[in-house]
Image (cartoon, rainbow, N blue to C red):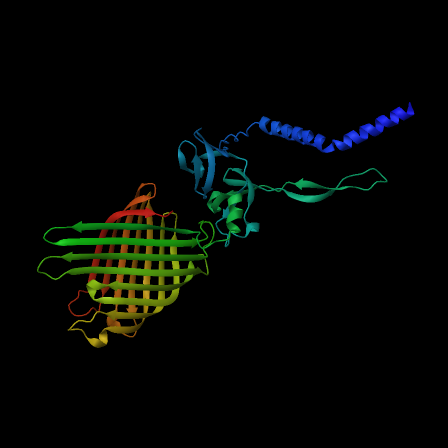
Length: 426
């Protein structure tokens, strides 16, 4: 019996070793089919349902009306609130009874020199108080020792210490923003592409008759302010502007009349206080209708914002610069006056005003030349812009240039009036 059992064991071992390769293939095939079946059986992943925008705030007015949506920003006078149905609305603080919100806010005081000093800016939950806004600061954490039975070590822990709430009168508030925005702005790294705003306006006209006339005009004004929010003190401001009027009028038997006027300028302002700044300027002008081939200016100076409100701002500046004037030669021209190298100063006034959506911009310059008083020049630009569809706007603008020393045969004054359509960049 032992011999038979041993024979069977040896025979079975040889049989399995002989057919090992044959037996392995079905096992691999079975495993592959099982994995394929599991893959096929998996249900396709359904896309996550679109999450509805969360209502963050509820504003209750004293007349009983309620607004639900999001508090965008606020001053001590009014609140800008975004609702889902009515869009952006502005409400007076004195009309608000209650504000419900789960977010923390930063309340920037008016008398604070630098709003980036977060230690002096109350932050936390806010609610409407009797005479202002009550801020409950974010709770602080302090170490705590948990009581333990005698003979055992106390385990360290933490407890939250509630900070005292503070009511800030609305008359002392410069701005109210959500705390996440406040932290992002005070720690924001400004890139070259950020902060730009401005517009591009263009117009053209063509007439084909006894006299053929064509005229093309473009006006570009770009402005970059750092920081981009009004409740932080300004640090840098860059403006770039370009205007071009090019045209031609032809008629058989008469001399062709060419219009070619352009201006390109740039200014960089570095603020040393909330209202005062140092400036660097450069510009280049050409006016074929006055015989001016080129007028270049390079210099620097100082400026100030005399007043700044939500819908109006007035700036004045004065600089000292080098100026190069070159005039077109003609038979009656004074050769010595064709090229002038001047030391001059420019007095500049810039005014901006808004009436709702209507925007008005004005800029006046008086160029006083110290080493040649006869080379005095001045210019003034103004524009009215009104949005008609999204970023598209209608524009009316004027440009008046005065040159006291043109060559003989040219007028001292050049005036342009333009209507057209423009595009706001922001």
